[in-house]
Length: 253
Image 1: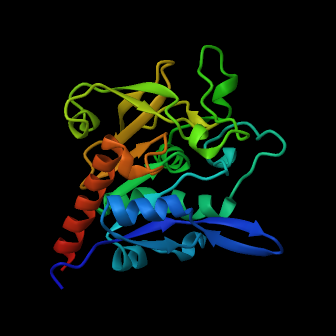
Image 2: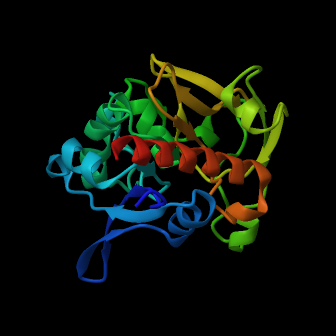
């Protein structure tokens, strides 16, 4: 089947909905993979080490790590205990963090958004700020949850793209983008092996890629999946991800 669409696995959250536990992926992520990446989205349950790399490589041509209401547990990066009431998802941490670097090393295309971006930094040995909005001199990066969704996901601040970087190429030479901002955690110490692709006006790292990766391997702090087809850069980002997954699928055949 030479024209088969690539399959992109989307990491699921594990959430308690009523009395039962569910493995969930938000519709906006599924739609972005299907429409903007041109791929078949498949949910990857958060089963920890049971989700083995060889199984992922057999089933998928790409890996998408999404945003989530939960935060990476601080013991994963040697941080202080979380504030009371912070939502965590230990099952997702146990699935994505051991898998992420091995998947990239194996040439599996990777796109990470928001929580996924933070997971990338932790998996490569970096650390996180738990509450960026409480840091002196930093912008208010989190959303107002009382606002309508269109307001929450509206452009919030500018990011500057690294000169000569991959994102500048995707942006057709532009050096600045307007992005949304819906996060409390953020990069503190950038992991070795990651290269900055965008920064916020307050200096916070907003995008990076894996240096010398065998395939597409990037993360962004904002949410390009939101109404993805209405934003030129978001379309280009997901298209590049989809193209890498198609190459992976072709090479596997």
